[in-house]
Amino acid sequence: MKKHAGLGIAAMLTAMMIVTAACGSSANEGDKNSKPASGDQKITLGFAQVGAESGWRTANTNSIKESAAEAGFDLKFSDAQQKQENQIKSIRSYIQQKVDVIAFSPVVESGWDTVLKEAKDAGIPVILTDRAVDSKDDTLYKTFIGSDFVEEGRSAGKWLLDKYKDADGDVNIVELQGTTGSAPAIDRKAGFEEIIKSDAKLKVIASQTGDFTRAKGKEVMQSFLKANKDIDVLYAHNDDMALGAIQAIEAAGLKPGEDIVIISVDGVKDGFVAASEGKINFIVECNPLLGPQLMQAVRDVLDGKEIEKRIVTEEGVFTSEDAKRELPNRKY
Ligand code: AHR
Image 1: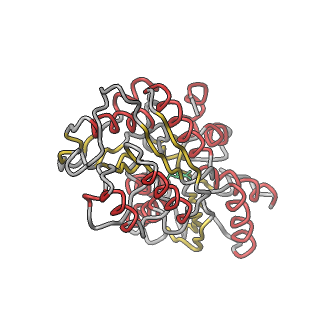
Image 2 (image 1 turned 90 degrees about the horizontal axis):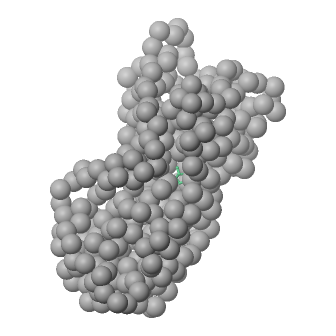
Image 3 (image 1 turned 30 degrees about the horizontal axis):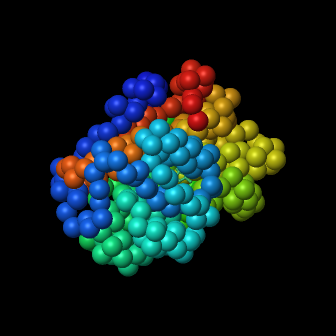
């Protein structure tokens, strides 16, 4: 079973910036209206957020707002309510307003090239946070700051593989996927499958989206329970869906964490509470506190500094025992 040493926030913020790809570019290249961060003018940052679908997202939004205020930036913030068209509208409005930098967390991976080209033509640098785009042209954005979602899926799979290594008979797994087409849903599924395929008894018998929300997680788990008598494991792509599923499992007279083993991703406080009560067995952390890294990247881009194309956040994993110990220190 993997172990995690809980990271203190201060240590985490300094340790978080792990560079994985040395493909830095001159950040200001081609930006017509960029200005030095050290200048007199206040920096305007337009941020197009995905929505408010989960505890993770709330923590992410708070981190961005607080860090922008601390940095003295003028933050223009919009909530797309998990709709790509809303995010595109916000980005276009930031282009019209001639903000200095645009940052966003793309709700889905595809369909961004046109609006990203519009930003590039207007000379406004774009920074991706949290989620990636599948664009072939990586000059359309300066950097992507966020987790390695494939690795998160692998961590979930490795724990399961180890847990059932000596078990006899099939292990029936149900999966609650995140938002269809989103990077975390695609990657967490892929990473998990890559690992569990090495043991034929680990079988995903049902897999459906719960859109990263508690309500949908509950609803889909209810239908899983109706259709399948023998569920051994739930793999939820985030804590909120796992928490909704726990309600459905308890309503069906079963014990979450015992009758059905639960793995989830995020590590928000509510998830930690459930894990410390033994209702979630294993949590793969996904760090939402991206604000400080984003503000630093904004400054670096505007100052024309070299910036790495990919900045990966450092994360841990937590068993129920780890969660019990770590809960009092959990900040979000
Ligand atoms: O993109 C990160 C994911 O989005 C988080 O895991 C999930 O909770 C959120 O909604």
